[in-house]
Length: 198
Image 1 (cartoon, rainbow, N blue to C red):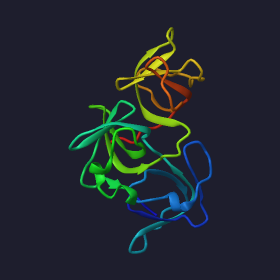
Image 2: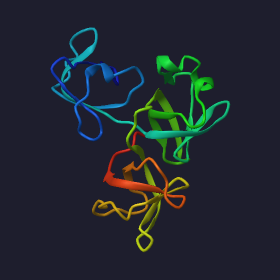
Image 3: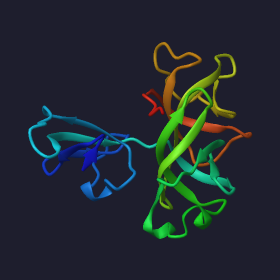
Image 4: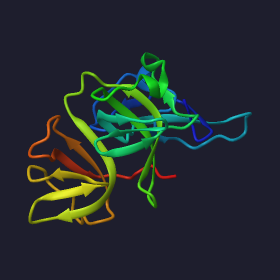
């Protein structure tokens, strides 16, 4: 795999998703965002190379498409911009036009902290999802109501253990139930997490 210009040999690497579950190396696809633990980078050849020990897939969102327009779509209340470099899974051969409201997708990409705009690097279907997830920056936190907000999306965190030091501005990954309760998404877990930024 090639990440930030470095050619990593992942043949012996542990490959996992964000929950720490092992996945097949075939799940590493063009446009996916990953974190790589590896050895020193060798810059002596035509390409920079390194040996990967661990590869972790890092998505922005997994959940239902709420709406689609000419240049973006909305998942879990977040607007995800599509660019000329956004990769759509082969099953979405029509690109953005193939997305429909209600479809469950997994999205990789980056977040512009200043504007709150997500930009998709890869979009793939996730029909078998047993949970949803969202990565972002906490915009509001209400300890009394046990809610936090990412963008305009209010999340009930009453059943989750919150990370130490959680505050407005913290970067988090929230794992969610697949059904809303009283208009709120319900968190299974809330973890501190870096957000891929422009």
